[in-house]
Image 1 (tube, rainbow, N blue to C red):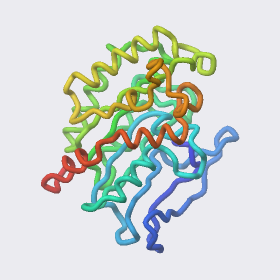
Image 2 (image 1 turned 90 degrees about the vertical axis):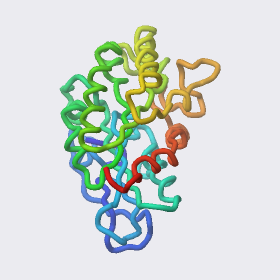
Image 3 (image 1 turned 60 degrees about the vertical axis):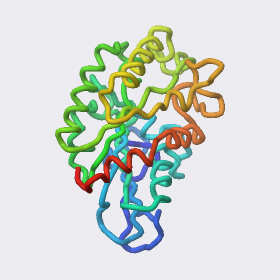
Length: 270
């Protein structure tokens, strides 16, 4: 259940402004606001249609969810990506944010708000979304940090997700995991440790070089500090693990929009 904007947003049918959204009530859990559904939906339709013609689905954890971005200002990386797509000519393309704070690949965490692991929610949150044509997958940092998972544990699950996405007719793009050195004091476990960094690098190398995805989005390269690539660039850093608003915008700018649009609109079929 995403919790950044504390609202479930759906496209308006009564306004012509491209970004006008209805805001529905939130559900209170443990004293903090949580949206009513895991995927906060942002559409780019200008009131012309109830459903998007095509949709891209960023799928992942709190970094996709937009944790520590400015609340209620739509400054998550999927929001910035939606703005980029909205400014382009061609088929209408929506962005469905399927990020959940604390989410993992391997484990059901005890905290309710962290949701089911990605394989268990893939069909509901991505594959069956109206108009879904592509998924941007970036997940695993919590498995490494919280569970001390190894890249060799995560890669087979990535492969299963890739297979499921393709079986449903979707293109799937792999996002590298962003730097997290320095986060150990806040998040404990193997967040930011030498061991955690080693596994992050191994997983990122596989994402970049395996050829398993239809394309790769190098979020790591976009956000890392050239002086210390294990850390976020200070200008993009919120807490050594999560980007700030500028970092989320840099993530969106790292997406090759032309390539993705070309692939998912080819033949106008999934």
